[in-house]
Length: 110
Image (tube, rainbow, N blue to C red):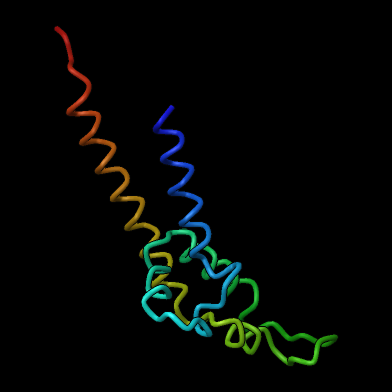
């Protein structure tokens, strides 16, 4: 039960650091803005938003392009490849940690 509580608290903090709720470019505490790079949600969300909005022409809004919207929100549309690389790095690290935990905790009996 404590593992579920720990995972919930960790995921909540990682989700809050994604820039969905806070624009980190306007934050007064600069060191708190650096914490967003620990969250894998940040990389996935930025890649998703950049993929959907970059280069899109917006006709009904006062902003002409999706790239201007991304810049205004603090996203960089040229970092999609970096975001995907970091996400695959997180995946590899999770697989290695899972293997090490299983290798240590599970004893094979013959």
